[in-house]
Image (cartoon, rainbow, N blue to C red; front, top):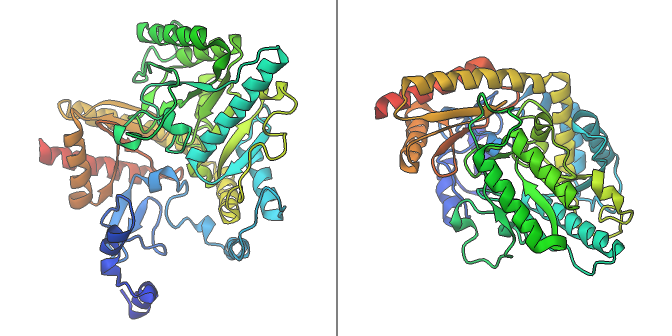
Length: 449
């Protein structure tokens, strides 16, 4: 590293070699032993600032870097000038209009919009996005009950096992993956039903419910009968990412949607992880034939928030329209909106949704081939677009694979659920990057076998 480059790193009196230890000693987190070089990454490869070591990155900062590292579309002088302009102050976006926010909203609607979800609420953080979707649903159900002369608050959310919806106040009552994430925190006793996930295969489009799906629907019916007018919404992830990349079949989710409509319950699609193009569609629910009333988004979109419509609009003074019913000081970051606008433009101009679909097919084919080579080590290869995963016999072996792949083969993977390894490459990923990552995993499995 040049002296000039070293000086730029050492401006805060911490040598780059000590950055990880310094942060670990002061900041809560699970830091990898990598110091990201923000100036030299390219595609799915990220470089360690300390010694120039290059890693193949299949994480993309937990899937929040849709263009990968160093994409030329994010290095234009016009874009960088707009970033600086937006960064000089931090406007209260819900109350003070800017051209930058308007441009983001217009671009979002053009590239990823749904005419049936015309209401938009913005905030920072996926958990707060889901939280506000719940608030919209509680508000809606209570007002809906009042219009029918029913003096009952809509105060419960129906949800699934193995769900992760965040770590905020309401969402902790829904999250039930790793017990450490919610243990000992006060929670609401909201109805939870089984999650009949499957590995997508021949029966994926079968309209008949599987036995586990029928059992889950019966549990939902029992909850709706027990709580009747109290249940405001059913919250689901089309793919349960944190729970272990668990895929829910279209037939099951459509039946849950039908049941909710029958009981005047809103459906809330939590697409913080599965939305934003990773499945090859703007939103994962679209390929399943679903029509959610509310949609929570984040990660690849840079800005988090809620899209709403359909049954929500049956109440004229719904929470989107009633002043100050839902709000926050910042309403998302203007800098994030500028970056998101540019990312959406690149996704549109470079056809990255189609790329995600094509590269997802390649990745799944490679993973199935690897599964055939090492049937005792990995299984259940699955994916929709670039949201892919494989399973290991247990979590300890999976964690060892993640460690060896990084240390021996300079490839970074993420765990998922109790024993899964997830893939979250950039929407712009190239075939050679995927095959190189599969090769790294193959070499790791060879060491272990």
